[in-house]
Structure formats: structure tokens, C-alpha cells
Amino acid sequence: MNSRIPFLDLVAPHLELEDELVAVFRNALKTASFVGGATVEAFEADFAQFCCTRYCVGVNSGTDALRFALSATGVRPGDIVVTVPTTFIATTEAISQVGAIPEFVDIDEHTYNMHPGKLHDYLETQCTTDTSTGRIVSRRSGRPVTGIIPVHLYGQMADMDPIMELAERYRLIVIEDACQAHGAEYFSRKQGRWMKAGSIGRAAAFSFYPGKNLGACGEAGAVTTNDAALAAKIKMIRDHGQVKKYYHDVEGYNGRLDSIQAGILRVKLGHLTKWNFQRRDHAAEYRRLFTAASCGVNPPYEPSSTKPVYHLYVVRVRDREGMMDHLQQAGISTGIHYPIPLHLQKAYWALKHRAGDFPVTEMVTPEILSLPMFPQLTAEQQARVVGEIRNFVLSKTKKVGTGAVSVV
Ligand SMILES: Cc1ncc(COP(=O)(O)O)c(C=O)c1O
Image 1 (cartoon, protein in one colour):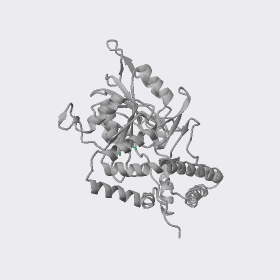
Image 2 (cartoon, rainbow, N blue to C red):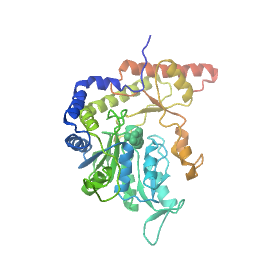
Image 3 (cartoon, rainbow, N blue to C red):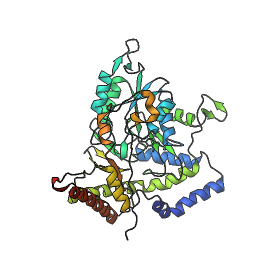
Image 4 (tube, helix red, strand yellow):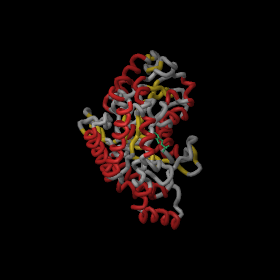
């Protein structure tokens, strides 16, 4: 009897690092240093170095990181921030929660990331210039467009060069949503070098939710930036708007990173490069297996300008529900990221979008399927996953008879 293949194994890395992780708790108990302090600062320095940025500010979650980055960079209530409909709702929650309004542009069919050409079209055709301020205004809402949040979805970076170029031309703030992309890289033709996720925009948000490539044992997040003043402002916002205890320059939040999570993240950060390599190796193995199986399922597209870290390994299949059921019965867990695009979520009915507004998003959404992907995944497990996918495809092809219609 085959054992189950989990979608994600959160236990193995914790058992592997148990002694070091328990030492973090012991140290926190002994010193009673729970909020802020040396451990948080040490993690911030290490993570900034990992991301090739000058600053990192630890916060309570990826959502906080987005919220604080938006408000610290000057996004104001009533502004428009442009993003994609294919992301976790936290991206748009953060926009709404600073009082701004999300507007969407469609994605690239192959990378699932923001399509720079569509961003260009949006800025050119759906916006107009306010002659009194020289800033652009959305025709849809009549509001000023001030920011862009490209999301590095599934661990692959968005095509940042043209996005940054448009941002410069239209004077827009770019906040990278790097919550799924710790350690991902992008080759910038403009800079002539590989650049890490989180080091390109004015600021970037990371989530350390437990299932992320770098995950805490609870909630945690961080903002990275090269701007000292911005980092200082975010430090203030995360701590009730104070620089000195009980002297509040502005209203802020209780959004600090606690020192137990910082200590845990510091231990795990030492293994992140290895874990990311393992994920990339597994992606290469899946590619090899899918090519050999020739069952019509294509591995994810990897442009030569990106080094993805495969937070998720996503393929497209037409009969997704049938495939998921088959895999579930074969003891293989899968996921969908995400089943409903944001513009069609009930939470955004007020934005008055309709089916058909973002055709590429709507075409891929019913087909995307996330397969097991985690550093400890074995070659045998991967062979079983692809073998079962092939079995399902063959069984469906047989059922439809001589017409041999592929289900994928
Ligand atoms: C793309 C994206 N943005 C934002 C977030 C929010 O992060 P958190 O859950 O740490 O608030 C996540 C987390 O799942 C995410 O995947």
C-alpha cells in the first residue's frame, strides 16, 4: 500500500531542525525577550542581506508588510493601486485597508504574472492625465493612480524591467508582493544583472506564513527596501507610530515581528538556499517526468530571465476536478491557487466587475492545479504523481473512445 503524498510537508523540516528551534524558545523564555530586541534586529540584517537590500523591517504578517509599505510610500485614501486578479486576497485587502482602491490588469498566460503590455494598455487607454497635477487618473473611477503591486506568483518573478519603466514614466510607486518568492531571481536587462525578489521596487512585502518557502511557526512578515527613510517610517508604523516609547508621531499599528518568530526564521534562513535549490531540482524532475509521460500536461513555463523558487508547482488541466478526485483517491493531495479570481469574488462586488473583464485570468483559473512541492519531496513520490496523472489522462481518453480527445 502506497503512503499518502502530502501537498506540503511542514513536519519534516521542523523535526530536522528541532534542537536549534527549541533553543530559540528556551532563549526567549530565559531572557523574557519576546517583542523586538536583538534577535529581531539580527534576523532583519540577515534577511536584508539575503535579499540584497539595505534594509529589512520585520512585521507581523505579509499583509501588514503590504499595508505598511503602501502607507509609508505615500499611497493615500482614494488613490488607485494597480495589481492582478490572480493573487491571494491579502494583496487587495492591503490596498483597500489603506483606503486606496484596487484596479486590475490581466496576466501573461504562461507566467500567470502581470502582463507588462496590459499594464501599458491600462495606463494609456484607461487612464487620462489630470492637467492640473500632471498625474494620471483612472477613467473608471476618476481617482489618481499612484501605485502598482506586481505579484511574484508561485515563486516566479514578474517581468520587472518594463513594469519599472512604466512606473517611472507615469511616476508610480512600485511595491513588489514577494510573499511567495523568497530568493527568486530576475535578470534585469536594464541593470545587466540578476536581481533578487524584493530588491527592485521602492519596497517589497514578504510573508513568513508557515507554508511559505521561509516560514515561521506562526504569523510573520517583512518589508525590504533600499530607502533608509522608508525603513524608518515602517518601523514607526509597525510600533504604534512611535520612535520613542509613548511619543507617537502618527497613529500606527501593533504590527511588530516577535522575537521567537525572528529566532526561528533566522535558523531556517540558513537552510533557505538549499531548500530553494531542492525545489528547483524537483521542478526539473517533474519536467523530465512530464516530457517522458507525454500525457499532454505541460510543466510550468520558466522564462530565461527568471530563476523561480517554486513556492507552488502549478500545471493546467482541463478536467481539473476529475483529476483532483483521481489523485485524491490515489493518496495524492493537490491544491488550487486560486479558485476564484479577485475581480469576481463577492468581497469585490462593489468594484462592479463582470465575467469576461480579464479573459486570460478567467481562461486559466478553472484549469490551474498545484501539485505536491516541498524540499523533502522524493523522486519516487514525483514519479507516482506523474504516473497517476498519466493514468487519469489515459482512462479519460479510453472513455471518450476512438475520438481520443485529450482531457488536458
Ligand atoms: C501573494 C501573497 N500576498 C500576500 C500574502 C499575505 O501574507 P500573510 O498571510 O503573511 O499575511 C500572501 C500569503 O499567503 C500571499 O501569498
